[in-house]
Length: 381
Image 1: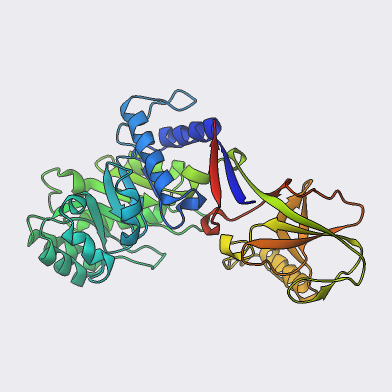
Image 2: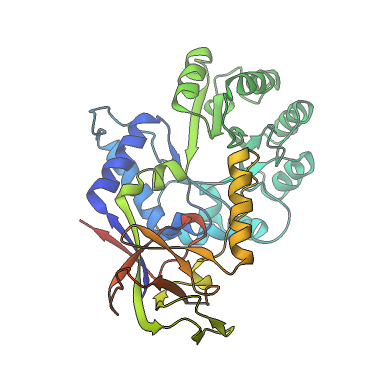
């Protein structure tokens, strides 16, 4: 009686190895709800991936894994460290920039964990604050991109570099670039930003210190990474990847919900919390999965193209009529919500003439993994 994610284990593991083979220096990302898998499970799988890389495993095409693959795991926030630290042995990069409050301060008090954590810095005041509190902190300096979310300007990156020189015990682990998801070639932007990185005269750059030549990047294509490695041979690129790694082979993942109850309906019958009436005869299906799981909750897409706007208008029109397509499918057809989903279950309308599943059967569900909580995750094989 649950909303379940079933994983074809052999196929998923092959996919993980193939991504790792294609991305030397891969840094897995485990944040939020763990892309539906849970943070703990992803931390254990990242550990497995690193062990496979060290052992000399290859992808399905025979490409060997870089031994540095998954030696670092990236999390979104300091609060997530507790769920992954005991399940992954390597370094832990926190993507959210350090701020002098909350869990970011608590980590500084843990000696063993503190040695493993790499802090992201994006403001000049935080450089001094963090290194005053923990002089031997490991840090990544984030250079602002067209995302304009976090990071230093070119001038501030130079000043942050100078601040690090005043704290010789600090360990610079590189510079981070977080690129937007929008399609298009990021190569020219990254080239420009890398000029700023080199011009910042980072501590240790002249002496060949590895951290001064390390660049952590997100949302670059394989082609862009290849061109950057060719044009900047003195730099080491560490691609941070979450969605492509964990969710890149959707055919290895299947989400299903149990049918909990079935009720015949005649036109005009009243049902549900809101006392709706059936528009025509059919059946009312009660299935597992509701708002508590993330069903029926949708993040705004902000699509600007004509197709996206047309889809938004069409959905709005159906919603006004009380006809909203659900993510639940029966025999390949998405069924309508009979009413808005409940906390742990949803009600679907199946019209007369369509096959009606029995109680205990399962139906397929199309979900957004990053906003869905599953009752169980089953790895098969």
